[in-house]
Length: 357
Ligand SMILES: NC(=O)c1ccc[n+]([C@@H]2O[C@H](COP(=O)([O-])OP(=O)(O)OC[C@H]3O[C@@H](n4cnc5c(N)ncnc54)[C@H](O)[C@@H]3O)[C@@H](O)[C@H]2O)c1
Image 1 (tube, rainbow, N blue to C red):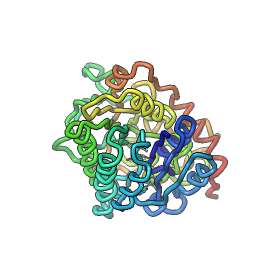
Image 2: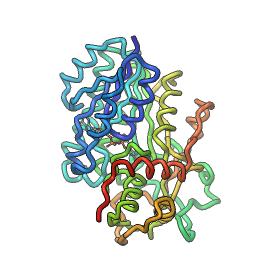
Image 3: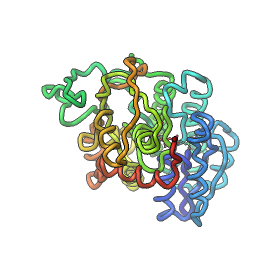
Image 4: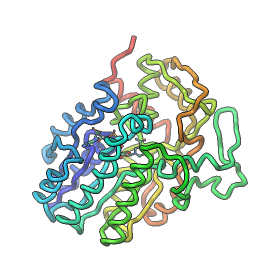
């Protein structure tokens, strides 16, 4: 029997993984306790997605907290070596929220990851472990890059060796401002690498740019494109923080991300592999450009306010260099560009968003 286990199965990434894996695994086990509603309020609850997943015949849901070490160990011992693939996508995902409750953030992001790694080592050490890390492990170091300003965006100085490629994995994660969220994710990122190197397990770290798609329960503090489209379509007021609204993010659709995980699982690179993953140079957008696209697709005008002060540690320009992953997995590609992704978010969102006024 082949079993895939997905943490954060009610979230954007976890939900997309469950749907895809249900087609290729005998059983898909999901873990999600809807902490997202506690972080960002009821309107961001991931419960709706879990209810949809429950209708899949081979999906088994566990309303468990990844901080519950003994319960996690028990779950792994139940499935044992039938467990082939673990995708760890549960997290406290926001900078701003982490500063409110540092212990909760660290216990979920860092200690929760250790609970899963150790359970895997004890019960299914030959499985593949995919970790959803983040570009925030680089802290605010990307803001040291030489940028130039155009009408709608900041962009990397064309003379810089990374122009045309994006930010590679060699960027230091040391001695910069991460936010407490970035620090708890960096701790987890290192643990996942270490289980790959020290215990020679098949672990992969995926340092995401912006991950997006229609499955995101977008909130003001998390889920950039999903929340922006929701705000534009339903009439919520949106605040742009700093950088003249020209800050740039690469965005990857959850279906392209899941496909990257599948490629990794089919032939895991040993030794604690680390990859930057995102839309890369082909799928990135500035805040101003994203607003224009949302308005065009929805036919509505976004009500927004500009706040001069950028969020602490926020990136001014971030585009992932995908060359390392592409070199290891040449058959993988980013399929969905920004417009296609936004249309997907809009069309699916219309089925469940309530208009604000
Ligand atoms: N969305 C992005 O732009 C982005 C960017 C980079 C990295 N990431 C990382 O990717 C992963 C998935 O992100 P996402 O956007 O799908 O997040 P999400 O918030 O949509 O999903 C995470 C899910 O985990 C669940 N969860 C949280 N704490 C839990 C706990 N203690 N026990 C059990 N379940 C818990 C939540 O209820 C939620 O449904 C996270 O690790 C995040 O840090 C996300």
